[in-house]
Length: 216
Image 1 (tube, rainbow, N blue to C red):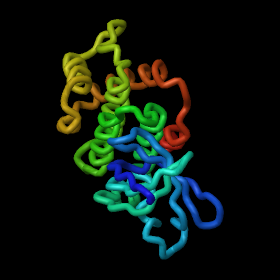
Image 2 (cartoon, one colour):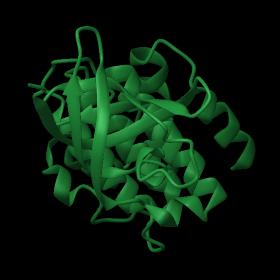
Image 3 (cartoon, rainbow, N blue to C red):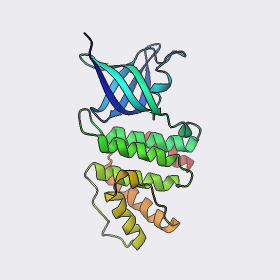
Image 4 (cartoon, helix red, strand yellow):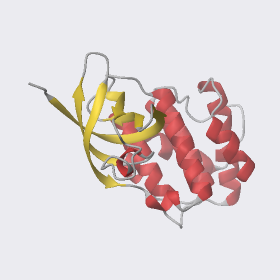
């Protein structure tokens, strides 16, 4: 008898397979990052068509084969529709998903990264929060979640507010990360620190970031 596996997570990316299928990459609470096949998901009347788009967050019912998972059903709690109607916001979201894909592994405990990605996408949908600030916070906290954050840089002079923001980003609960804004001068310093740390700790280029930087 076939046994099902239930996971809570988010679609990081999807790709077409065969004539009507999709292969999705899921970041989950229970099993880290996993790949699954969604049979018939590209058919217009498929119940999995909308549920296998990037950013979809919810509960996924899978069955586990010898070498892969197959997606049977999905109950989506948040589609992040706001990003789908915001061209720039969508690329920010794709970049965040790329970073999560880069950092996470199958069968690792990736709950903190999933929580960070979810809260960051919510922040992108909040009109009061500048997207460049959301990006800085996400990049710096992702490095911290991966255990690589080196603290406040000692080789430059930063404003007191920048130093405070860096400490807050590193140590505050993820649910409270996006509860502040900063002056333009502080954002400029945070952006420089985030850029330097990204180049130092993320040893790859991100396609969505290349496109994003042409838009900003």
